[in-house]
Length: 561
Ligand code: SRM
Ligand code: SF4
Image (tube, rainbow, N blue to C red; front, side):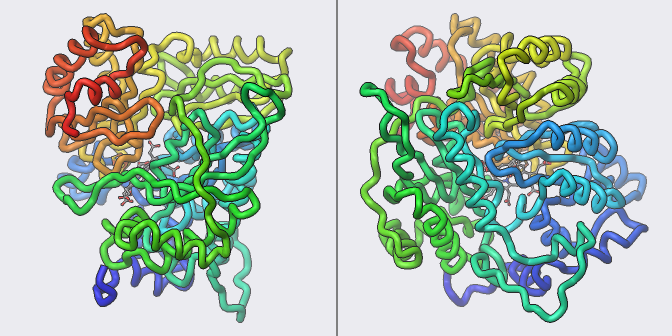
């Protein structure tokens, strides 16, 4: 970015916002419209909410000369994805009374409510806060929800990663009181100028994302985030001993968003900057954030993510700047290995003898449907469960910390409400992700969440035809190239191009360490299956024992190098 380039419009809105207050309060009071003022839609994101409209009825309402059917999405901040049963029950109630009757688990271990109308927005955010969960900085040009490997109670290391997620999240929060004034009715404190010591007067140039991972399971897709911490474990292994967190390999500059037809935007994997001791975690997180704050592009929002800042500076200069600001020197990166990015479904036993049940929640959408009364079932489980819940970065749910004698009751409720998909679905279905897309996402070009079941059925039929029914394929669908379901890491990915049409990407790996490539453009479902068929045929005939589709495609050079 040239230093003289004009600031983007959002930068002006942030600068004039009086630390994110804008005119949100008067927008909320403007009863004749279901919308808020344009500038406020940008600021509202920092408070954890997006204005949306129901795209299924957009055209019909336009013809009737009605304003769009506006409503709001609310996203929680939930570091590491952990919540209590009491919180679950409260959120479930809000989804039914103020939302559209569903709870959505996101790819960043948060909850989303959809369909909140303007008059209920304040009460809903206040009610979420009453559960001791907030929505501060869940969206906007700030550090977003910090994610961490799920199953955090399975080992002491997972528990440590979770603790770091909560600490990093708290450390990087905006300090403005705007949130407390607008949503929680707290008094304005007169006379004290508010400073944002870490985020700065106009916050970050763009969203910023952090993930912590405990190998060998890369469930957070650590290379997809601006900043990542890979736990380096000592003391485990052949010689036995209690595993200990030696520190973290720090990764920087991952990011997936792109724009069709704009070659200056592309997904990038994060690079490993080096190793740090645990005590340096907050200093490094802060220094990476402030370097991006000061060097990121504030002119072109499409090029404002850290991945482009690092490309422009070069990794060595970026690392040197982070070291200078933090006073920490990176040591050489330590060895680590990832085996999978998927969740482990079913029951697992923790180090303390407690049990954890990972349930498959397709696309993270918890709803009551004819096939499964998930919302009701999980409410019933929350009513009897004595542990907590964990949201996974794969949009699934762990009923965590179950005493051995309570397993039978949980199993009965799971079965009664059709929540036992984890025991019935194929490996391909269990691990597939889809973003929200239509009807709420304003950026969707094609269906994702609503299309996933049909696409999986069609793909599974083709896999079975080739004798591959038992071979899991990592499938992800996004309704547009922004990549919210992290599709660029999948073995087979559909990226929405237009209604019913997708770009087909292939060649990611099962551990989330390799980007896939664009294979064919603008295909219908028939076109996708036709394009995949010869690849599956060859895979079925030439695959090595246990070889995955993505690895095979590279080995036999079916993809461009
Ligand atoms: Fe996302 C924008 C949904 C994870 C990249 N994302 C959006 C919005 C808010 C659309 C908008 O800007 O108006 C979507 C709301 C849809 C709706 O109706 O709910 C949306 N993103 C989601 C969620 C809910 C997808 C899901 O199915 O779970 C995820 C919420 C995570 C959370 O709890 O915070 C979600 N988004 C991601 C991820 C994956 C991740 O973070 O691990 C990515 C790719 C990683 C990355 O950021 O590089 C992602 N979302 C984007 C982008 C592209 C950013 C870029 O650098 O270009 C946008 C568009 C934007 O920011 O302009 C976007
Ligand atoms: Fe919306 Fe695109 Fe993200 Fe899907 S990938 S939720 S369509 S922004």
